[in-house]
Amino acid sequence: MLAARPATLPAGIAPVLLGSAIAVGDGVFRLDLLLVVTVATLAIQVGVNFANDVADASRGADNPDRIGPTRAVASGLLSERQMWQGIAVAFGVATICGLYLAWVAGPIILLIGAFSLLAALGYTNGPIPYGYYGLGEVFVFIFFGPVATVGTRFVYDGSAPRAAWVGGIVMGLLAAAILVANNIRDLDTDRAAGKRTIAVIMGRRAARLLYTGMLGAAFVIPVLAVATGVFPTATLLAMLAIPLAVAPLRAIWIATDGPPLIAALKATARLQLAVALLLAVGFIV
Image (cartoon, rainbow, N blue to C red; front, side, top):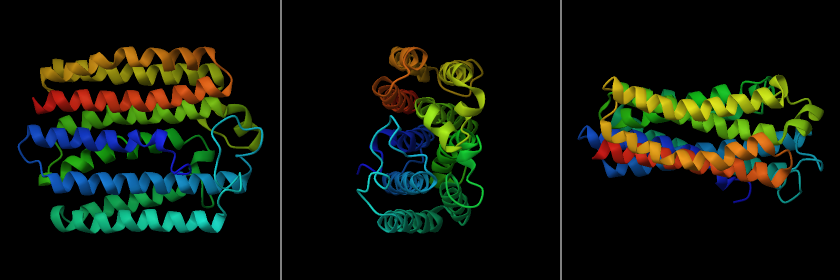
């Protein structure tokens, strides 16, 4: 459970909720598909977190100077072999779910799943781990944003309406902001370990500006979507989540030590889930 990093799991749940709510509004929702997509998405995300844990331990990014939560392999709670067994189980569950979804929605789901698994393994593993070269946020935006949201909406009736794409951008921005918060927290130890995240490449101030811009855009986009008729007016309920952005923004700009920045990461994940739920209510009603 520790290695699964439960505080970050809302990043996987949120786009599924939003994509499914759009399906409800379109009159094509199915409960079985919601359950299977949720399990598949969480299984992939847990597999990503397991792979990140074992890779960061082997590459020295998770060292005693790190200020974040305890990591399972680096601390000796689990061996690398045990963690790889966990990765196999997680991706096995995702594959079984993918086969069911492909049976319902067609083989394109298998293609989406295959790319998602490859992206998960390549994040901090393989010959060119893109998470070590400043591309982590890009891939999180893509796969926990448009891919997860549009993919969820697609399984219901094989369509991908504009609302799902725009909603996917909002989800992607907030999911990537979770990683930016994580990388701001780990900036010093990542730099020492040679892990070139966006925060390391840009520096702390620019990374803070990026985080702020992501949160701001996540609230501006729904307003523009309503104004252009892509979202129903009721999705403006998402603006009720703005107060939840205050505490993590303050921590990102003021704090440099562990506990406040850990709290900011968790608060960003809660913010994403709140925005997804409020947008979902807007689409349903």
